[in-house]
Image 1 (cartoon, rainbow, N blue to C red):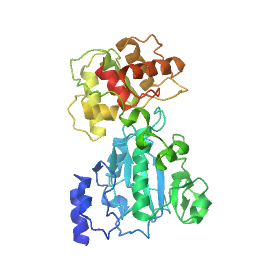
Image 2: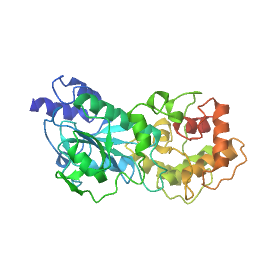
Image 3: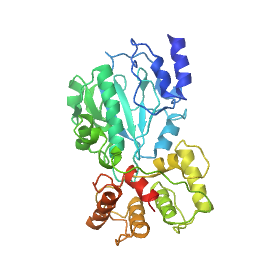
Length: 358
């Protein structure tokens, strides 16, 4: 069996589909709901043979960094940390990095009977997207089915220590069975919304569990390609979204020059994408950030949506980085005209329509 697992881990780096070769008697009999298998460095987790009787908990984390940086760090032998899954915020794209039967190192003293899920979040990101919640809920559904883990969450570490299983945030995971001894980290706060997450976990979020703008309903639109030499309103969108992703640009001028190209190449590398300096469908999917609800400070992604609505689609609104009633009304009007679900949320479908219809 050890030779078989070594083989599976070897092919796993190129496709999660390899896991479907496992027999029904192993812990991961059903293919996990991940888009890609990217193996963590073996020095960052414990090789094991856990089965259904050994896994009782799901531990929720946020990355405090980009999806790509988290994936890269778990592949680094110096990290001394890992998680079973890493979920991208923009679209819910999920990498599995550790086999479920192995012990990932993500919550000290609470690893041996848990599955760890990291969710992309960093300063300036406006919360966790519905796409990420939906993808994470799919993982929970898989874990619940495979290991009989209850779909309930706890914020009291003593409840988590004494209950038979469920879902817990990192900050509430008891260390070494001592419910008075928990992580010093605030993770998954301040970004995490347990109420919204559990709507996806229990299937009450609507639209088949994928939610509003991220659900794929309405008009059909395609991502446009942009590269060095292009100009226009959609290049402004790219520049603002690069700022949102943490890339400081000297110019916001709607010109795709060497500065934008270099930033895109850096972003593609950090996101695990092919590095070609061209903004196509895969790069757009990773680049866009969901805009939903008020933000206390000016937010680059809100600037991007407002600028596109005003100068690309003719809506007379302020471009100030703040999401208010004026911005919400313009988004809803645009969604209605584009044949999208009208929810005032700029998620992947609305971003795609904003770009395609410019």
